Length: 304
Image (cartoon, rainbow, N blue to C red; front, side, top):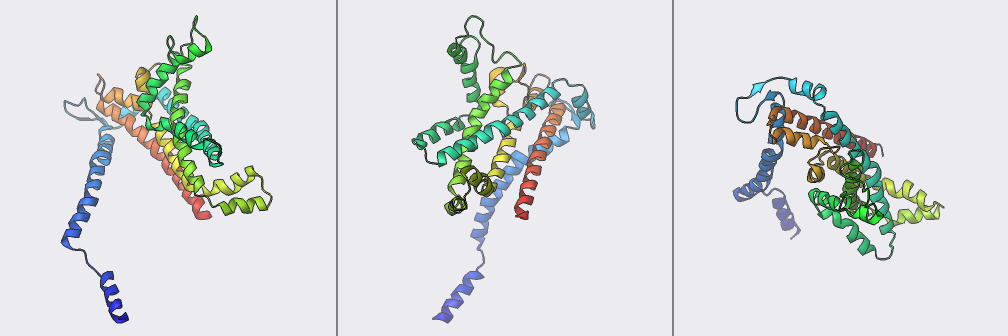
């Protein structure tokens, strides 16, 4: 009997896939790869190539080399304000919304009363698209009928929260952070639930305070979650489009690189080559942040 069992085990180990198995594997793996190439990498490579051309989408494609990039950096006034707004978006989400989401996750993980209610309420904005968040921001920050001016009683000379270019970017950042905070909270809450409680108990026995336990014991174990949150924060900040487009089409102080791409490719100008150059710049900046962050995290993990 043991000899037969060994033979069966050996046969199972050397079992070959049938033609049907190969067809199923080919379909299950091939279709997602083809869709990814067609929807993601195909347009990406096409944008890179088109960024060196001049094309209106109808006529002939003319190769212009790096002229689009030269015009973008020197003769396109909207570019640098949009780039600064994207960096401001990244800084605000990374330095304000993300730490606040972590704080909420820590408070809920400690078992406060009605934690389920808080968790559901804070996560609710995440299920909304940024376009819907933009419409909600209009209801709150509108000059004449907004809830904020009504609450503070500013009716005679109401503040134009969304029309003033010195204020509207901060109001929209608050609305975007409202959604981003709930997302970060859920991710960190899942990570905190997976932390070994014996580590906290050992730190408490050694006389560590709650703050020392968190920053020296708990937070280092959240490195995988930190990587995910960091990448998501970069992507969310650099691809922001819906919320500003819903408010004022990304103009008058709300310019973003994604809006400039849309205005040049889909707008009346139909400068597809020039718009592709902006898209390539946005792609390069995004990949630069993400790759640098991942490399640093992976090096830190290897050193440990």
